[in-house]
Image (cartoon, rainbow, N blue to C red; front, side):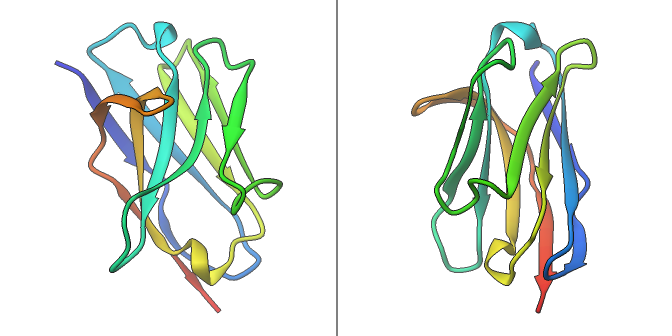
Length: 117
């Protein structure tokens, strides 16, 4: 059974940083692309970033490009999202998912990120 467990969320002031982690189990982590999404209150879930299985290729939503970095450690079965220069509009529940390019098989339970202005 595939499990994804996100952590690292919290309350941070605008301009600050957070690093989210997503620990995966139950599948061969290194064989799959991984992605991060977020959902703000009253809004639909939106794509944030994706990384290919080796970690050599990444894609970002325009809204986070230059501020967020997705990376992975296949030895630890973990994907990360480093978030810098946070803005109030980054406030959301952040989810990791197995997959990319519109095809996502499994989702984590989410971690709350709140950015105060």
